[in-house]
Image 1 (cartoon, helix red, strand yellow):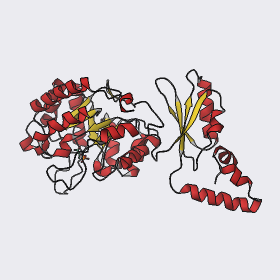
Image 2 (tube, rainbow, N blue to C red):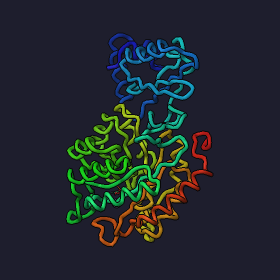
Image 3 (tube, protein in one colour):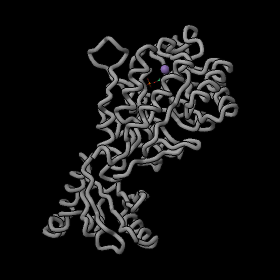
Image 4 (spheres, rainbow, N blue to C red):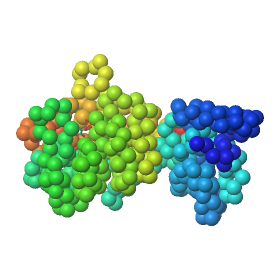
Length: 384
Ligand code: PEP
Ligand code: MN
């Protein structure tokens, strides 16, 4: 039920509420609460003044908590902001603008709140190993679709390290279309990835397919990949949100950008700010590639969200010879990173061999991507 303090903080409601007689008031409050529980409550971001103190920030956080809503402190280069979620109705900015140190309280109109640029204008930068994802640089993840053997992973890892990749990918748990296809080595695959990391220093990116595999993946991985099929597995997203580990969230094959950002919101709302989006192709009437790589989602996402966005051209094209062109296009379009599949002998791969680059081909592509990245600006200012 909505408390008196919450009612006062919620714009437009007090007048309505005050006009009600006592008995009728309960009914009104009930109706209002019912109404609020449907649809999408507008959220708010409180932007602190440049020179505001820690006490000012703490006071704002306490004020939001006292109302029974959830504060999310969003540190920025210039100013700190506090996002509010959990409010069942629109908020009155005056309630927060009166507090010392507050510059402005701005309503957030998008259905995804913490993921929106309205809430956080600056690009999110996710740190993986000693490298940053987002904020202007280019981050390359390379490796096999699936971990198959120790030699396969180690050889790929060594060559990708030499090629200048920033992280090694490899699935130990594989969500396959057919139940008869190779399903991954499971925990053994994770140990092989860990050995490759030890040998090369490359952080590892690997997929969790359910809550049980997430527990194992969390023990080993530097970045948890959530695949296209699980993009709307909200319980899994909530679990990932309770970790602090970076999450590579792939777009579902029939998901809109809004769906993707709402899925990211599930992770952010649990307190994990380290979300990286990834376009991997969608299903359309086109049949000339495995999926249609929707590269225009890159500028669209950068406009609506502060989260870094990756592109996986291997998954989308399904053909090794088409991967370099789409990887280059992705970087030119402003992607913060690219994930490419690489295999030392693609003809023998247990999974997706047709789309895997040979290590020397991947090395050439990575060099080209670095050259393109050097002349393309991917900072937030470039999109607004
Ligand atoms: C993969 O990256 O190997 C994979 C299974 O991708 P997606 O979830 O995009 O299909
Ligand atoms: Mn694959």
